[in-house]
Length: 93
Image (cartoon, rainbow, N blue to C red):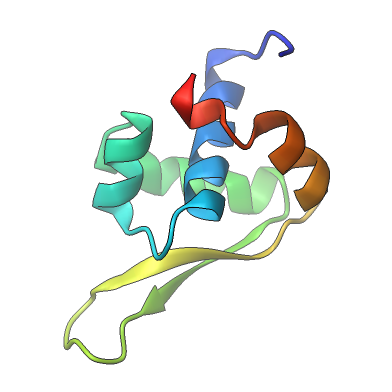
């Protein structure tokens, strides 16, 4: 795999965690990636702007409050298929 900067590796790990896990919330993504929840919110905001990704927090319709999960609606400048082939397992490395 290409040598990635720490920042890029973190961002790619977040993308892979959201894309490969069923209905991941912030705690799930933090557990998968090892990135603190406080940093995840900021990193997801950067993914939205830096990569033009449409990452949404989807509210659970069965639970009251702010429970829900993250979902990638649009991959922006990234090609989903190519990304998953090359970096889909980055969280397990």
